[in-house]
Length: 453
Image (tube, rainbow, N blue to C red; front, side, top):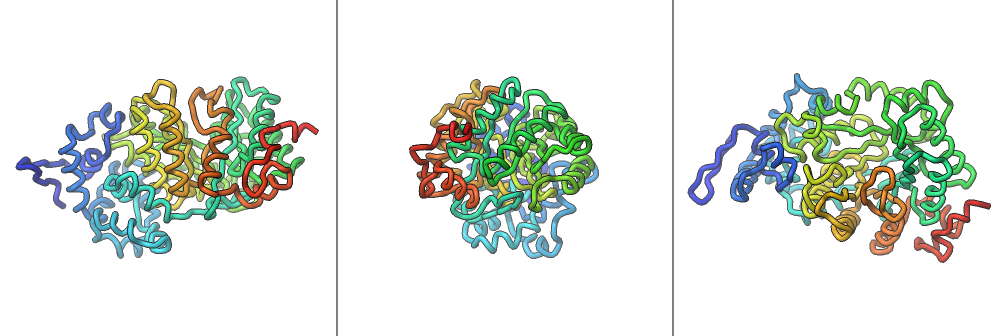
């Protein structure tokens, strides 16, 4: 395995695959903070050149965290289909990139099970933003909970009715407003201000009662910690369509989230037994570049590669929803709008190549060098890349989590620009309620009093 190259008369030598992956990454403030980023643009190009000539077998045999030290590595490596990997292991990363850009959707799907997270991350590092959009657009991943997400021609949205004090009336006011804008076909999902069994159970029941009364075909979820949701399933009869958890790309970082692979296996088994949803996909995961560094669990690896490992972790549980909360952690990891846009495109591409139904919380925190134009640029590019879903929040301003993301109006605008519609069953119900007309918002849209009769 060659770990050096010469550019402009200077020899660039890298210690190992981990360093090549880190220094081949596009500039991210998190990698700079960790002291692993390329020192110059030329060094970054040198790392990309070395990475392009590295075989997929070289990368698979050198995970950024050793197999014996990390349960995420083991989950990823153990899931590889040996026969499929055998067919592609001699490809270089550069050849793999060319394959992804020229292959059909079916050809890409046929080799997914032979990939590891590091291989997928390596391909992303060799791609331009347009490459990431072009390749992701060819990859379609569907999943079914109560309804099916990811079908061609659809753009879905999570209705996120967060409230600073978990006031039931305030939450339901946001739910009614969001549905009145045609938002919520992916899930009605709340981030609770207080993580409790009683509160989680109560909100789940409220959501389900509303869905039943108004015949809204979607899924409910309360994004409490997975252990809280497990207790809800064990101790109450609250209806839970989707179980949620934030994931990290290493065992140490997972520990900071209060999880590990055995716990998630247990949660998955319990949810499979007690879920209220009808389909085979009933897990919801959120990720985001940089979380491993913030918990001192990055092992000297770059944040993009660790993010790819989150998707390998998620794939183990056949999720209905996965999304990167791309700009939520802040400027320590993604400094500005340019880095946020790049990370969002990388994450979406990597999730789809992993084989999970990928969405994106297109967002930024108020202390980042980013603004509404950056957010809208990324949302439009991801819509072109056939992203499964975005968030829908009143005015795009989350009053509980205190960050900026896509609004109900943004979702409507993106559907209009792209000609896409919500999930079919949801779209039909919105038409019946007079909220949508031929896939577009009607004059009745945005009036929550529809649901106050």
